[in-house]
Image (cartoon, rainbow, N blue to C red; front, side, top):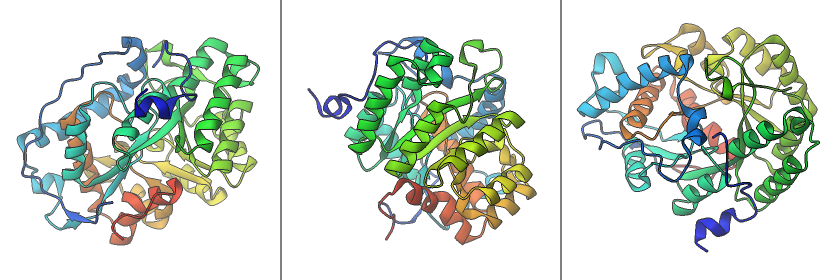
Length: 361
């Protein structure tokens, strides 16, 4: 049994799914990024379907593609991207989904070039996939557990599963608790209590269950007990927001990251929720800017409440050029903020909620 297998033993559930410390450094934009395909060998095609773009993803991919084209040319137009040659802080990418098809050696090399110190979130498949990434590069990848596993059991069990009335869901939650207790799993999610419109016509990916259901409360209790974040993908319909607020109030010691919340919630709603819930953070997305120009209301919120934001890439497929483009996009956004805010958003908030060793110190 290999190292990654031994780490994941007892954590991964069924094998068949119907779903899916560097110091601040000078960032060089001069080198080209090697091309990488998007092969998915070893997993059924449907297992990766969650990460393909629907109507929302089309706009995201257009933005990413524009950045990737620039990255592949090996330079960035200063007037458009506005990333200078100044020393830039490290980045912790907290919305990186491990997927089959990544050339890990090439990815880690690229992350080093881009100043991405660490990356993590739930895998496109069983928990063992993310645990395998972390086993190979323990100082680079942060393994989250529960994304594909929970989706699978919800699809199999329906409402009974989110009410914790199925043996299979309960058995998986026992394995998840074991993984958290052993510290192999360092985060929970991404989970999808309200995903009715995000993926457009992909009806098989739609989900709606209460954000304060027994399942979500159990996961949030794990967050509190083990000091790890729960990453939640949730469209901001008023009933879902009310459920989320009840979940946040249920345990002040839990930490919840609202995944790519800029897709779903205006800054006015986020600000009011931040004021009511000290245990809520936001995972930023590319919808906070026009091109690379940060929207004024988002800039104001970031500067006013810099402790509440983390960054992520959230690629739909393994692609080095796209990864480079998204990171350089974030460099352009960060370049418009004060140095104190930049440090918190780029890496310090992630260090805090993930209990990571401090970078650059």
